[in-house]
Image 1 (cartoon, rainbow, N blue to C red):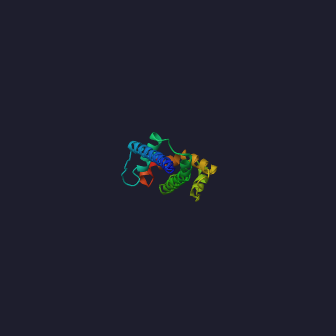
Image 2 (image 1 turned 90 degrees about the vertical axis):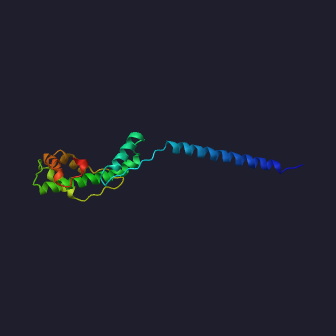
Image 3 (image 1 turned 120 degrees about the vertical axis):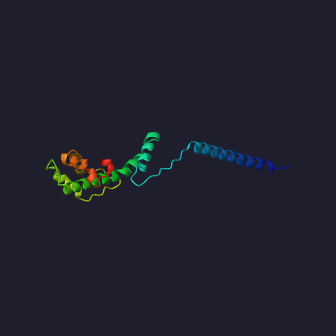
Length: 156
């Protein structure tokens, strides 16, 4: 009687099953790679490469995850704040006044340094300031003259 051959068959079967599983994973990865599209975006700084990539993600992928949106909140806040600072400084240089004198308090708020933490909500006083200043005729006049100073293109 030989008792050793039964164990070898079980080991061989386990190895064959593992090999088959690995082969299946390799085929699955190859199919994924066949469907993958790579895109090289070239261009000068501020030419819109990131914007194109984000638009493609919104259109062709599932959009942005909640975590990605929360990560961008502080960037958006900072961009809005710095854009209003640029506009307000240009208004001083071009002697353009705010139409609504009450907006002066919002202009002073904009000039304060405020960093938004990653999970922090927009402070309500800044939301009111951004909204009120955006609708001010003096701000609109300065935006129209944005080519005369360093106003970022996405604000015109």
